[in-house]
Image 1 (cartoon, rainbow, N blue to C red):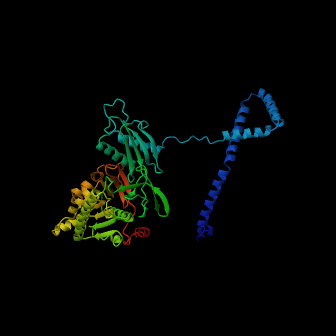
Image 2 (tube, rainbow, N blue to C red):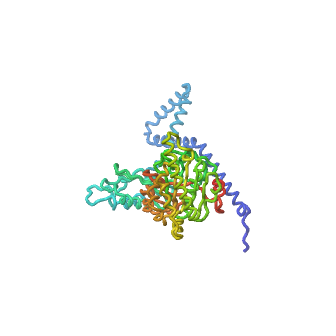
Image 3 (cartoon, one colour):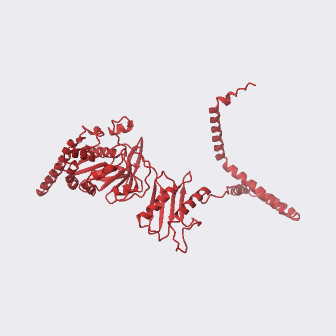
Length: 495
């Protein structure tokens, strides 16, 4: 038997049917919102009528006559008294609205799936927060988590987004290793792939866990509203700093909290060290700092050891003194920077002795940016030349007084080649890209209070200025504009 074709409305009109269903659903929702008061009153009238029938059925037969007479008398009085019918109608509608309201109990407490997740976290923490000699343990196998967990929240997938844990006073929360074990456990049990913030309150024996929002990655290089001597390393969480900057993210103007690095004579961290893996964004950070320094009227010298010519966009700009890629040019550049630092110090000293202000050329900021200098040091050693990094000691030691700033970017694999002078005088540190907690602590001096994510976008990492706290950091997108893979908007912003 031949199959009959489907009607046209079922074959080619699926889009129209879907649109019609959406319109019908929208109309039904709007009608429900408009008629909601009438529905509530109608439900209340039905409840009152049911209550009246039950009351009449429970009334003895010998008392029904007087009850009818009393009801009729009340109706007559209401009908004769002025404004009484309107008042009675309003009272009836109010009673109907009260009895017809939604009485479904509000959801309190976690759901079954959320309860199972909290119980799993509780059982996992028992070996760490319990002791056999504790007569009244807060954490025990098979115990309840109500006293230990409070102020919890979950996302749409049922994963924990906020949790407050109360732990026993004998837990060694003053030891970094003990805290790290708890943080690693909570990170694994709460869901990987997210960044968690852990706040330990040793005085109150309390640990707060919260999931951090992703930092914005669409902020391109642009003129930032900063004072002279201030540079924007990137942007961080709102709770980390007490300042915001107006920035453009695409076409949207937003106020975001920045990580501000101050240089010059009044700075306590005059030099910076940026460390990361290949492709982590350290070169973009140096380009961003160079553009900000040029905008503030400073002089910039770039020494690139990678040999990829990623700073060609800076060559020829006003204020760019040199962009060197070879060991010979790098050595000459660093030697000139050392002599320039000494010249500035001598000129400023003579001006102070004569009671005159410092010369203008000694107060002009000079930036020395070195990207992967260990490669140039290796080449210089192979050719029998002096190490260019050895000439950095003078700018590093005396650069703050002479308005000279040194920024060094290096990969993790070659940190042992950068020398003790760089480690000693670069008190501002930045680590970009994924890295183990121990490597972060070795560079920054402290482990971050967040769990590092396994996958990070370029320019994402951590920053610490001197002895301050460790901040999450997202560097403004400052790619090589001559790279074919660069986004057109970012290329235009850099150029």
